[in-house]
Image (tube, rainbow, N blue to C red; front, side):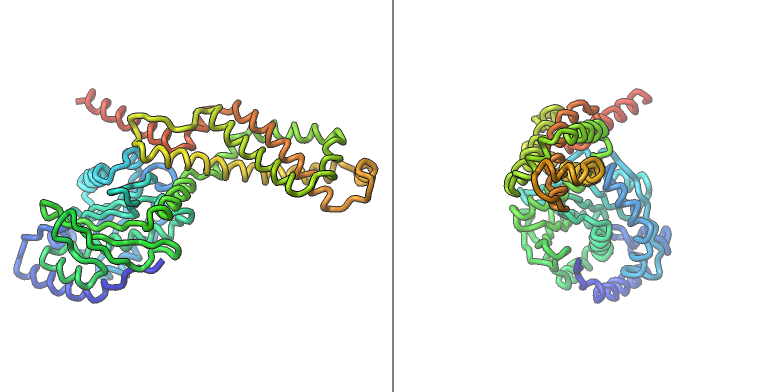
Length: 428
């Protein structure tokens, strides 16, 4: 993940200008307020990380341990950076940049932070483009969308992105006069009109993704810096993969205890009869692959139907998001079923080795047996057991299963936020 290296030259100029203005006692800083806030606590800057519940919260807590030291080294070695994490349901309940930024701004004021970055597990779109990050330079507020990072949304990548965003907020937050030369040193240019979008490609934030940086100036002269993933088709695929990872499909399997139990019991019972022994000897590899595919597809489809996981139109999502939610549900369950199938195969491989004697196996299939014969038998039993497991999936707790889907989690978070607001009104 290569980041922009233009800040080094700007730091010296920024520091000299800030020192000059500090001596003159200028308080007309209308930007991010770095000079004024530094007078309050000249040796400390506070960064708040507001995250949605779940994986974003886990990532924020992990990177917060060393983020402050890294910022001190890369931005201001003479200042102490204090990083705080706050989990907020609303961050994972809204899908519009304005609402996320507004909520982050309210948390910034409430906690007296100098800067705030919101990490959401929802995809963000602006004019049909997928937003990786959005920064309000004047308010020192930013948001980062986790799904835009794709399949490999590691804490290290999130950390580097947040360092990049803090640099955007810090170096452009001294005053408006300084922002123009900084923009010239940087990878982008300040647009004179809100509809004007002058973009140029920036170094890739990660190896296989093209990222474009855009600066805009609004009607009230507010400055916004956005990073988009490009192109649209490839970007949407990365978003679906990123949303799938945020769903943590590997964590669904432990909640399917009945599925695992029923599948293993059914498969073990099938091994008693030699019909599967004969079939495993007759079937060719393409037939095994077809049976495996049908078993897994059937299990995914049955789970979706049995637990009503297919996203429908509600007040808590948009038409654009419904398609992403449904695709993410399919990919999440698909990965979970693949993990389930691999686990079944390993279990049945041991079961076949223990319960099927070699001499009896040879007598049934009519030739000497080797490891390949046992692998094929375990493969066939795993496919048959997966079908039985699909039936057992309908017996699982619907609430637990539906929590693994984006739309339902967003619904729960929105309802929780509404309940909190109603409780506050009642107290008043």
